[in-house]
Amino acid sequence: MMKLVGLVLVIVGGVLVYQGLARKDSLLGQAAEVGSSLANKVDGGSRTPKHMLQLAGGGILFLAGAVLVLRKGSA
Image (cartoon, rainbow, N blue to C red; front, side, top):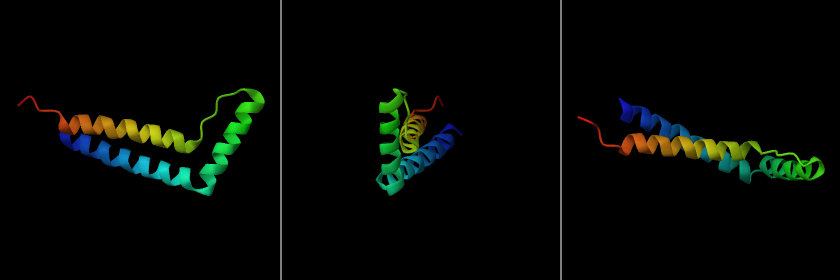
């Protein structure tokens, strides 16, 4: 059962990473990076573009799923 959950996490993580990379390379992603950078310089805030959150979240899900899939069972 845990291997199935791990496999689902790997798939969802991979999809999130793919979407994050696609958004980062798009015109919308470039505009978000420029806008966040400019806004951070103006008021000193800390903004993160959406694609960076997708990349980080997808990476975490992918790694957690990989650990569950590759972990040896107790039986």
